[in-house]
Image 1: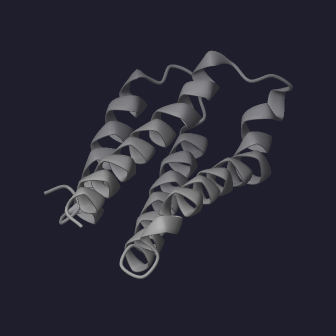
Image 2: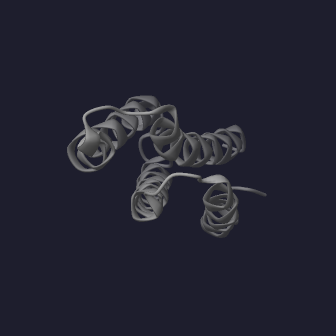
Length: 121
């Protein structure tokens, strides 16, 4: 079921988690938190779409493509988000959570949806 409604599930879960995360955020950085959620959702949706396009014609390559897309997520983090987190010279546990919670959520949802889709093949 999750693969059928993946886009709605990832958007809804990330939106709910963003508002929950924002509630517990004691330090500033709301714009960085929002950027982190948006970037992770966009990359998860893009990655899921790519994998869905490839799963019929190239199912043997999906693992490599999934790993490449995961690497791309980290590359985007280091290029775009890490400078925002590291503006004060250090990355606190709050800032780490601002990256890792949306990353882990979207990657988990993406993985579950893809595993279920591949098990149906």
